[in-house]
Amino acid sequence: MSLRIQPISGFPEFLPEQQIAINRAVDVIRSTYESFGFVPIETPAVERTEVLLAKGIAEKEVYGLRRIQEEEGEESAKDLALRFDLTVPLARYVAQHYGRLRFPFRRYQIQPVWRGERAQAGRYRQFVQCDIDVIGDEALSLEYDAEVPAIIFQLFRRLGIGKFTIRINNRKILTGLFQSVGLTEDVAVRAALNTVDDLEKIGAGKVLHKLGELGLTGAQAERILHFFDTAGSNAEILTQLKQLEINATFAEGVAELEAVVEAAPDHVLPHLHDGELVDVTDERAIFPDYFRIDLSIARGLDYYTGTVYETRLDDFPQVGSICSGGRYDNLVGTFVDKTFPGVGISIGLTRLMSRLFEAGIVKAEAAAIAPVLVTVQDRAHLPAYKELAARLRRAGIATEVFLDDRKLKAQLRYADRKGFPIVVIASPEELAAGQVVVKNMRYAQEDKVAIAQLGPIVRSLIPVEFG
RNA sequence: GUGGCUGUAGCUCAGUUGGUUAGAGCGCCUGGUUGUGGUCCAGGAGGUCGCCGGUUCAAAUCCGGUCAGCCACCCCA
Image: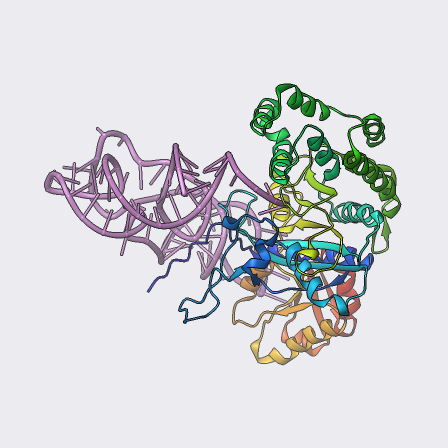
């Protein structure tokens, strides 16, 4: 019998060498988040559909859940669904547990989400998000809006993903702007937000046309469009914005944006630490080059109320956003009659990693996760070979023993193909003499060493990427 | 969901105007005698040519259907 084994489009899986690289990236993400005091949580893959759709997420993007054989009265596909992001489940989680949480509640969450759209390069139907969010009780300082992009900057610098730009804006600026030309209905404002969000992609002409469809006169649409010509450094843009007298909402957005942009650099560590190595680059000095105001960023999700972020790789703009988020003052309030403003951001890990592999920025070569392979020459002495491995593991060195009955040649080929940097070889005679051969596969160099010295000697040969 | 392109070995692909036992590269296995991989050489395993139906003496090759994949739109990490 042969079943269909083709992959399902949009549901990615990776080879070991890639998964190892992904996991290493997750290690960096997790440790960076934790270094800022975020605590981990996980939430179920499944939520009630009404919870997921409470804040205007498009229904057609959500996967329903049901048993293949449903029974009468059982919760079905229209009642239960796979989560679409990690932010809405977080809001539900906070609404449910707020009595036992400490605020400001800082959590990170690294889990898959599902979206029912057609897959494409860099666009998946299942992908992993790495979120951080801060939720306040009643109030939440704008300092948190400033901290979030600083953390992301530091994290991406540690990951070494090449040049990127975190673009920031404040929705109140755009909302105020649209209100000033007579768009008062939420629906109309939202439509206008989505339109200008596409400015870079669809061009000025189409944006003008779409704004016209929303009821703006030609002059008003031109005025809106002209607003997006505002350019320069962050400070220059802010100066120009402050000179405009639009309305209270607009002014509030500008003030918030200014506060966030000014506070952000203080959250950046001056230098990157990688174990004992310290990069001499002044991270605070280069930060402004990676963190820029972009007035056309609006974000598609409805729940954002103020600050919004969107991050792209400078060399691969067509990939789209790899990390975005923002401020949501009313999301938790959807589920409980209290006020818990929040701000957060999400890294699209699957998209990010798949692009880094493609571009060769991250190398996925070795499929070995242990640096050492102990080969077996004489199966009559298997216990002695196993003891060699145990000795290495006791020394904290991950080690694999080749247990199949194959020739040494085949065992070495296996070591080569899988990418072990170090191989231990020993004949029964050598074992009896308390000695083994340690082979460095990369430099084709061998040394005969005393078994008693195996741990320290092997450790000195382990390449950095094996930790 | 809509439109365009594609569907041949594990992977990337070639297959002349339809004509004998369907090919290449990579990968995999074996060997090239002395415990030693990565290079080279020789040999080998592996395919009902996405699936179903039709035209034909004859179909991977033409036609119809179907399924799947890729790209664009929508939307977004």
